Image (cartoon, rainbow, N blue to C red; front, side, top):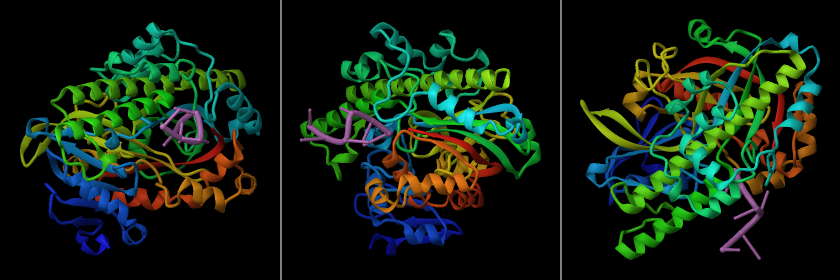
Length: 476
DNA sequence: ATGTAC
């Protein structure tokens, strides 16, 4: 049991000390319950990450951590390119730039006036979702390359959304340095009819109500009030991101064999940031980020059209958009020195503190909005990043509830029909594309998101602003 | 997460 070697270093911080090939310690943000459920495999994966060349500080795990492909989901690791730092496909994940965005509406819960069923039908009809879902757009190769270079900005130019939206997306809606020429033809082919689709698994579109406010001032600044209706979209880069992951993880394994790098786990294959393969993956991954940002932007436009048809609502303003599967070049202060680092966040959200120059002026005084999606039928949270988070976690926080049960296990344990009945009892209207898919997302297959958020808040990585509850859920 | 196996 690797868990036995964990030492508590602070109230909710546990550390696995440096040993063998580790360059830095591993650190887990958790309470007793989360620790009790922690898989040994997670610690093993963290130890592997902590042993990678050029890692800085510590290999980190958020309270929603669970084991993933090579690198834990809920993991954060920063690398110094000048110190031999690496980039790993497994450290980003297959669904590149999977993320959440939240839109404000001018409606309060009572304004829905029992039109939840109609709203659910219209959203379900308008936004394609489900495994292998194909959209209403078919892109030429040339157009695809523009999209991969320009992200959400491409979508806005095409009439999906408004210029103001870009201000409220990380990196202003465009990952710079994207290289569509480093993305395989196969990846582009898979995506040509998938723009503006939600996908499956834990991806969703939810109409939610602000149920609780923890910080009135910050909520006001974000334009959130009690009982207000908002819309959250959780999806990613679909087939394109997955194919980029597949292509480059294979290349990274081959490169290791060729160059004689030691791989503790072939799923955690990597390339030096300063290498041809490292540059290629970075360029392709950034193209994947742009794909996901454009995807959420297109869906946003269709959500707005539905609200306009049903409620006559004007444009629903974008509160913010976060991506939780990325590797980004950022400046961080380490032991009093500013360093350029490549921060992997896999199932972890960027959570920059107040004053950070990357933040839109509107939010700069309070910190970056951090959007946390719950499991199906449970709460979501709006948080903000903190100064302490900049010091403890390279400005990062959790991303959601985190699985405690595999998809297969959940499929065997729960029935989609029963889930819908129990959600209906809570007054939640749900539309899904697959019974089996619904069972995989049963709330009991996940940790309690409230506890996960509480640990992040207690450690000081974030401050709580508001809690949202679903009213209408559309699943893939 | 994923053209739910290459």
